[in-house]
Length: 195
Image (cartoon, rainbow, N blue to C red; front, side, top):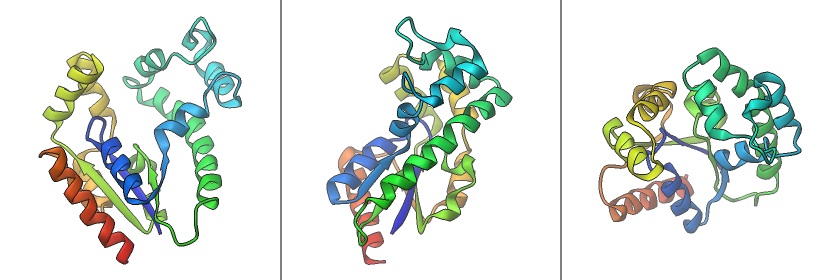
């Protein structure tokens, strides 16, 4: 069974992903793949440099993710250019990893921008992790050291909760304790493995 997992930034999606992996799901992490396809020496990084210039590189020649973030998250046209480079490379890696998973397994594709990509209908089920915007902002300020303005612009650049709910077959509202979150994830996992 192919399952899409998505949620806004700082919604707890990574925690849900880790719990699903503990329960036995094969998790393919879109964020990790998005970093891998633009690592130093990759054609993906070459394309990003061609699009945005060498100033997006660190002195070591790696992509300066914060610099790229400042460019694209306040400019929709530039964000679409970046997504046009990264998304096809990530989906190519997804396909290869999925092909190597066990036939009877639950394969969870952890895709931060699933609602935005328009690919939700390619999955048997979609899990959406949702957290109120104020909690997301609080987590970004506390855990990532971002400014409120950066946090709000990142949320604004992503799908709305309503857009994510529209693609959800399973909704996980992450407003309680870690134990409550785990119990809900276990419930969803049980429903998916019975299906």
